[in-house]
Every structure is written in structure tokens, then in C-alpha cells.
Length: 274
Image (tube, rainbow, N blue to C red; front, side, top):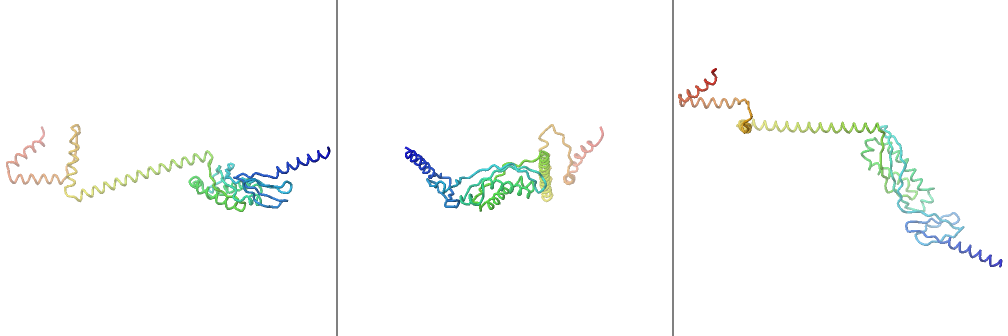
């Protein structure tokens, strides 16, 4: 009876040991196997054996991990205090190195990312931090990726999610942006006035260069004004036009004295008082 009991216990223990010997490694995992504390092999996906009490193993997830970094407070190169939110995407490239070269690789990557982000933010001005976010993210990623390469880690991306400023600094930036918009508006207006003045100067030069162009322009203006009967127009006749009329009158007087006297009579009557 005692023998059967012992055999039953041994059979149960053997069954447990056999069950514990077989390990399932999933497709997105790798296993780092040790024998008596010494590295033996990297277990690929599938059903694998690990002898209890003699061998052990560590399971490593090879998928990309997204780590939301805690908000970091830093001071930019121009002494502005900012808080930066970021997320880092990385994956284990070499399972053996991730287990053997660093303790808790996920914690190590997170701490390295935080310190690197603070250092890079402290090396740039606020304007560069706000305007060149993509370049700064890429620079942070390159530094972290190089530092974690001996750990078998590949950093795929670092994204700056948000840059938080103090309220007084937000007001300063808003005033600066408003001043910049006003400056641009004044510049555009000045450029428009300069272009208009240049066009007017070109037109004046053209009218002066072309004989009769000024007179033609004057007649066109008078014609457009006379189209509306409600307009009262006071204008000055150019001296050239008066001299032309005088010449015409002189020619007519020489040809017919009677016509000249008939023309001069109404002129004198216009100037005489009633």
C-alpha cells in the first residue's frame, strides 16, 4: 500500500515536471534560455523545452512598444521654462542583448529618453522649439537609438506631443504675433503704394513722351464727367490748348475780318457787367 502511494506521488511529480518542461513561445516573442545561470540559446517561436531546476528562461516581447513619457520641465537656451510631453516608440531588436546587457531594458529606455529630451530642449531657443518640432524629435530619436544600440534596442520614433508654456509667456507670444501681423500689413501696404506710384510715374512719362497724349487724356476725362448732368465741373484748360485756340483765331481773323469782329463782340459782352 505504501509502495503504491509512493509510486503515485512519483508519477504525479514526473507529470508536473514533464508539463513544466514544455514551453510555448509565441510568434512575436523570443526566449532567452539559461542552463545553471549560463546563456545557452535564444528560443524561437514554437514548442520548446526547458528542463526544470536545471534550466531557466526569460520571455522577451519583440513588438513595438509605445511609452508615454512623463511630462518634463526644462529651461530653453533663452531662459524660458517649458513643459514637454512626448511619446517614444521602440522595439527589441536582439533578445539576447536586451536580457544580458541591461537590467529592465524598458525602464532604462524610458529614463534615457527623459534625460535626453531635457538636454536637447535646453540647447535650443523657444522659437526653434516651437517651429522645428520635427527636427528636434528626430535629433532626440537619433541620440537615444545610438545609446540603446548595445542593449539590442531599436528606437523607431520620438514624438513631441505638446509644449506647455506659462500663462504670462503665452500672452507675450500672442502680443509678439500680433505685432508681426501688423508689421506685415504695413509692409504690404507700403509695397502696394510704391508699386502704384511707380505705375503713375510710368504713365506720366508716357504722356509726356507722346505728342498729343495729354490732350487726348484730358478729352477722355471730360467726356466721362459730362455723361452725368448732375455734375458741376470746374477745370483748367492747358496753356497749350489756349495757344492752339489763339492760333486758330488769328488765322480766321486774317482770312475774314468780318468774322473776327463777329467773334470778338460776344467775347466783350461776356466780360462786361450787366
